[in-house]
Image 1 (tube, helix red, strand yellow):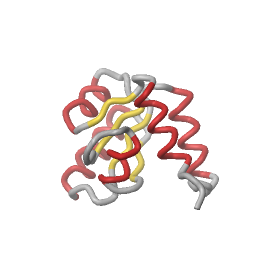
Image 2: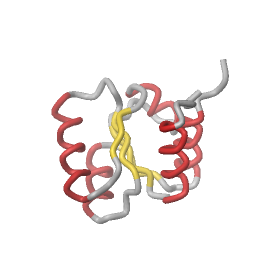
Image 3: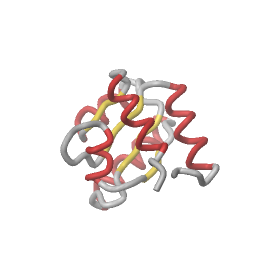
Image 4: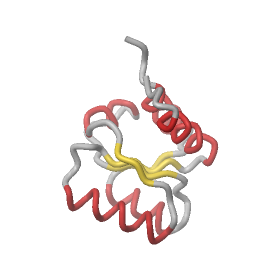
Length: 105
């Protein structure tokens, strides 16, 4: 099985300190217009998904659901994470391109 490129990009962003994780930090990154892409775990609560989806529409930030809490947390070397924000434009575009091409793995 090949490594998941989206999760690799998340790990790269974490190592480069271009990532906000956790509900509070992700929300702050969106509201201060630092977020280039918000990723919410597929197994996050419906309230969390709706909150970030609506917030991203309002602030015009790309939003996607990807992986689960464990995968997102593991990709960045932490415990479970339901929401993250990529702060680097290039990495955000790479993730979106990877997902749109259907080649996340």
